[in-house]
Image (cartoon, rainbow, N blue to C red; front, side, top):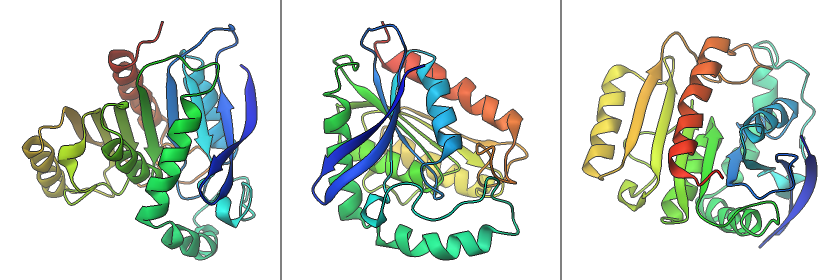
Length: 244
């Protein structure tokens, strides 16, 4: 599986990024993958390679690039609960500085770069994300109707109040919520908002999960839920992208 590190020109500099794609010399649909709040690191590279193995060009940008190349802080090999508070104490200022204006400006740059790679086929793309990256994915899809055909967010802070407005979404949507993040009542409110906006979606709570369930380098990891994530994501991409 070919992989490469890239530099994406943005309005504020150069964002380092990881890309994985099939080793067949062909062109494949593009997928923009946003990391969780811990950022671009080995587990995200593994997930990108896994997805690329199904026939996609997967681009994972370091959205903290303004603070340096990934990893922007020292991360342990396993992010256990005992180190999580100290890690987030360093990361929260970076997350809070990632304003909606920066999110949208960067999304323009990431999609523009992705769609011009020689290994990426013409046509719409998909966006997926984890944790805060799920919100970035939804914001990217809402800002690029018509270009983004599918968007998926897993254990992301996506609620009935955002992104605003949901009615801008033309992509097909899957939201996989952690049981520890989303009550059934809040899920009902979110799904009602998606219905009212006319969005084509699936939105569900993954049983027995806590926030971060897809990430194998954290205590939140749930292998059954990770497989459920693939079982939802791959058919979504298969329905919406011309994977030839």
